[in-house]
Length: 248
Length: 74
Image (tube, rainbow over all chains, first blue to last red; front, side, top):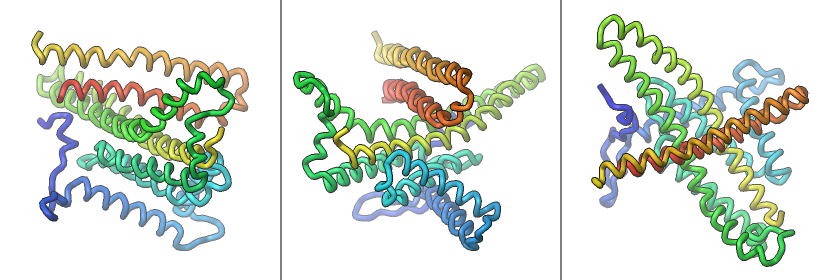
């Protein structure tokens, strides 16, 4: 029987080496391609007709669009509109990867720290660059909030700097750990069903319990898939807001 | 003490973070319920914030899980 951690194993599908670096096409890359293809199909197919009164498919695409558009408007402000495509792409990719991971025998790309860290690093570097581009050296005011007694700055500034630099870590670990823990939990309970079923009739009757719990867990995991994509997107919005208005 | 045993104990201690997370989650949902019962019409507006708070608090528990894994498997 496969262990609960075996689902995260990366297997190369097409081995490739470029200048001594392993760039094999793996099952992780395959699932990223599948997710991006499915999302493109979903979004392009839904807006193909551009009907004034949306059909079912178009309504779903519009719902996703409006959900993120409202989030950006409420958390970044009016000038955040230009960053909407980035936040929308981020949200849809994470949501797609999380949901694709719920398909049996599939692979969850977001359960690998390097994938989520790459996403978080893009947000972090991008937000820092936007902050400096908009406010120049004034962006550093972010680390020294106004209205604080002067002696306290000795304490506040290091804390603010530290909290700023742990952002990419907390952002990536949150998504990665949620997906990892959820999928391990599901596989552990699936393992209970198998091992209980192997010990005769009484065990098979008792195996109903972990099976029922696994169904409940599947529902919870789909909720978590939405929630974590939402949290990732909304935190990116909040960081963007900080970069736009550093003196708060 | 043997290293393996110390690792097991360390991983166990790392899960103590769950105590704080438990208090936090209870606090979030308890406050939401008492607020929602006082003013039910305002409840849907803060539901998004409730989920955000839930996810942020739950993440702390998962940080502890990651630390436990790091202790166990490195």
